[in-house]
Length: 179
Image 1 (spheres, rainbow, N blue to C red):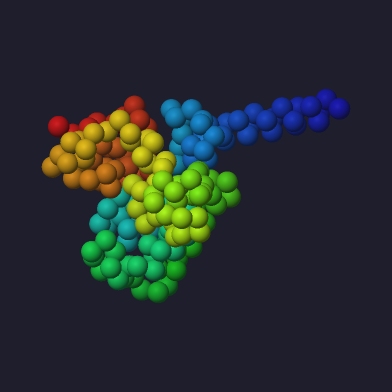
Image 2 (tube, rainbow, N blue to C red; image 1 turned 180 degrees about the vertical axis):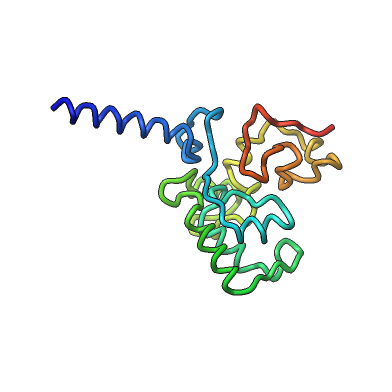
């Protein structure tokens, strides 16, 4: 009996620690100070996606969004970002395995998100992280003047303010907004 009690306490303690350190804490309102992004970082994703922009953490979009992104690499936000098929499939698999909602990670793109984006239920998930309800909530205090600053350029430039964005570090107490 005592061993089972210790096991239960250990499991609860471990689950609590995970909820505060795993990105899924976003959905549950966990302690922002202790949030960490997954240590799993696919080399092809970092090399290919990170060559032009911050390799956006997969958990910031649902799998359906990553499929749309990967299907549209010939015109990736105005650029041709096509990849060899094997590289493309490797990155797609990585993104989908770690996408929002996968295995309980992060937020879920639901009908409320679709309505907030002017889309009806059943419509495609967003192509842009900045289109998500989660992003708008996290950045609601940022004025349009800040996004327009030359050093920032747009809400998609995470690295302008989040100094560790390229490594998946988004601690709100380590933000430095450029003048």
